[in-house]
Image (cartoon, rainbow, N blue to C red; front, side):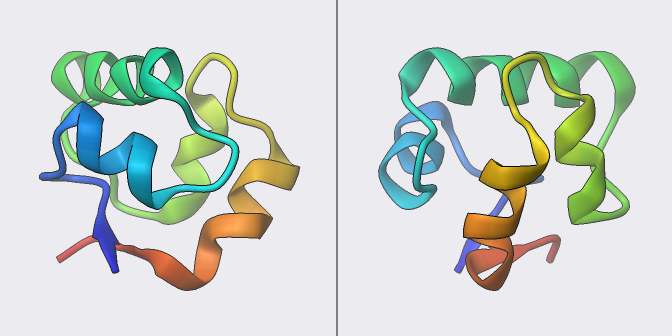
Amino acid sequence: MININTADAATLAAGLQGVGVARAEEIIRYREAYGVFSSPDELTDVKGIGQATLDRNRAVITLE
C-alpha cells in the first residue's frame, strides 16, 4: 500500500503505475500546497494525473 499523504517521491514513483519521479514530485507539491488528500479521487487534481492513472492504482492507495 502507498500512503499518498506521507510517501516521498521515490516511494510514490516506485509504487504507483504510470507515475514517474516528475509526477510524484507534483503529488508532493500539491500535498504541500493544499494539505493532505482526503480522498484518492483528489489525485486527479494533480497536474499529469488522470482518471486512468488513478483507476490503475486505486487498489494500492491508502490515506492512512
